[in-house]
Length: 292
Image (cartoon, rainbow, N blue to C red; front, side, top):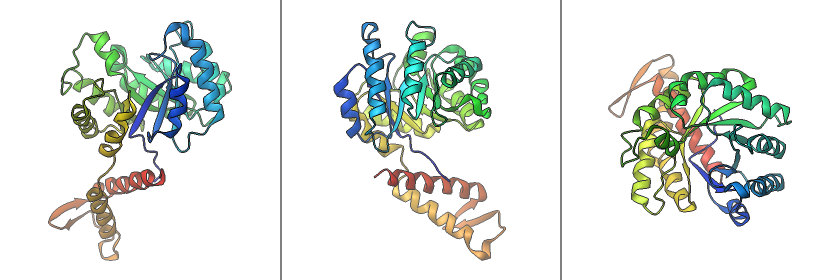
């Protein structure tokens, strides 16, 4: 089982050359070089050129590199997609995805711009229509031409569009988070939680990371480098979890237990489904360790 850790996905403003340089030293699993929300209209062209040059220059190590473009409906979207595709990042993050057609149109734009096959498509799930269409959007991942691999929750935009309030515990978001997790898992798409805005409040960040982890998210998008450490810790399996997972795998691998569907291990009933979960726990722990 080969997995790519996406515990921490840090947004970096594409218009800030110093931030792009600093990004090469940060311990985030993924860097989202942003041409959209973090960039003022009069800086869009500069940001586009800086981000494309930075990605082509490389030097980001094992970090996953993602470019968030502007929506195709904006004056900058088409040029963003061409420049991003030609820079050949690991993925391009498309905002305001609301229908399956948005995915397929973005994928076509990638092909037309000559993006290499390795460049995947990430989708911002941040509109009311996206919540209603989560299953059909995720379903496009079954078509290799879609390149869809990751959902990214845009909770700030969801709050804006629905007039819901973002309060501690996010009660207004829980149904939408659950719907998107279910859609993603049904169609083998990874899913990353939305940002936590109060970057100086580590206790609040930790609580929201734990909530997202317990909901089944693979990681969290971040807006400040100080959030990376807590996020990496919480979205990684603990040493105890990894030890228990290895024990489950070992016991089920014993010849005497071949063909058994359930076993008792240290007073707990463990089934074959737990073996599959254990293998994933070990695989993600090994993938995290390989990042160095």
